[in-house]
Length: 122
Image 1 (cartoon, rainbow, N blue to C red):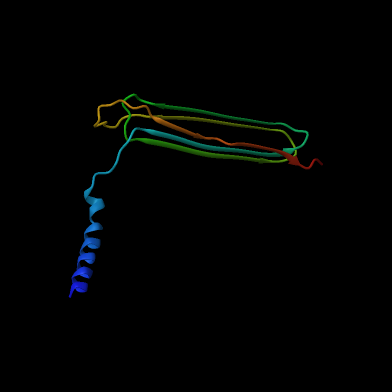
Image 2 (cartoon, rainbow, N blue to C red):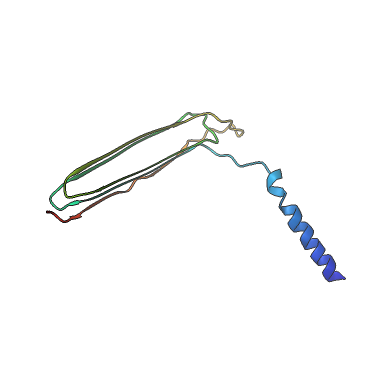
């Protein structure tokens, strides 16, 4: 008898727990700006790779609960020289900060530049 009540109680808890996420408010935070840009150059040993990645990330002072994400990949393979240029501009604003405490935006840069001078010359 106790085993049946225990099983019924466990079933009731698991059934109710499936509805709880819909009843709780969603979480918000300050604004987050993320940029991921990869530049890869596999070039000749006697050549040059110029890799430039310019990212501007701006957020309004009252920004809350918004995000911006950019991604980009540049790949070069060849015996000659290469110029890889990437320019990104992000701006986020708006939202409703219920705390009243001003918080700076979170800015994340992931921008590896890979230069491999190993391509055989002809």
